[in-house]
Image 1: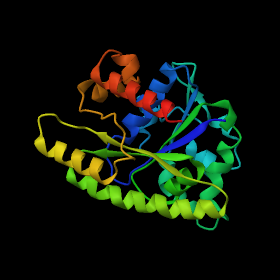
Image 2: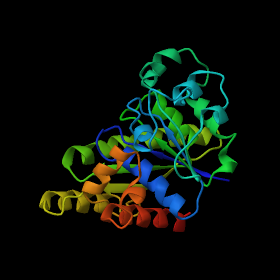
Image 3: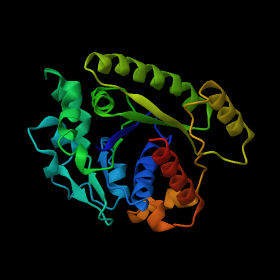
Length: 256
């Protein structure tokens, strides 16, 4: 059975989408079959894997709002082991649309259950919020990766995200489910900035057993790859960013 991992942090710009794309590619590099579900209305993961927001016909919005089979929303990427469910700007109205829906936070879990055995990893790229979409992602997931940029405001948001996860953990326990923190991922470390190392040390001190050993440094290759609709592994395999995401994939696989 595959493992479902949400990549979540209510703060934007911390590297959620970059992690979703490149961790997925790194798993594929290890011959794992991966499904990435883009749940962010900006659809950056969709674009970053070479799909056009305007040309896709079925999206994660349709999956969450309609009686649609998950197989009908899955698209192929340039890698045969890497599939994606694209996002849509329509996700911005999902909260209002599902207001009266019974068990609205469990919709995604029910849909994913139908294909979970087909994939080694299902990655959920979450929006920077704590609304109904993130609730659906956390209820559907086995674990969560929390990317945290090595700067103060991202560090401050970490405690809020951990509190959210703790709340969902309690609710899932009532449903005989569980939700673990896969790890806190330190991102965008600038080795020229001493303050970034202070934040890194602080987080590792607070969460010594939950912080990944792998750290993602700032990288021009990570910034440039999405412009070509590619992961950094496809764009610049021997780059630092590619190496770090391959190390992260290995760390997760070994801890499984």
